[in-house]
Amino acid sequence: MVSISELRVCKACGNVFSKKAGVTNILECPQCKQTSFDTVNVDPEELTQE
Image (cartoon, rainbow, N blue to C red):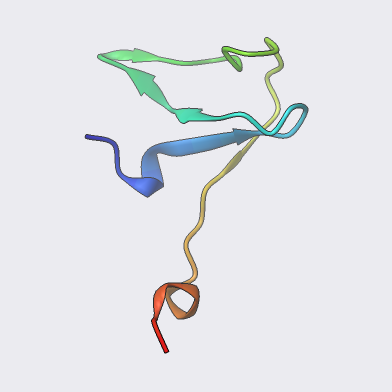
């Protein structure tokens, strides 16, 4: 299972993927092969239900 903190978002294509595949670090987007990423950050206020 992958936690949200282990996800990356490709700045070029928007693909969301894990930082690791097993013990291997993923260094490029599996979809478009770019290397510019943002990490997925969770705002606790966005997770609350009204």
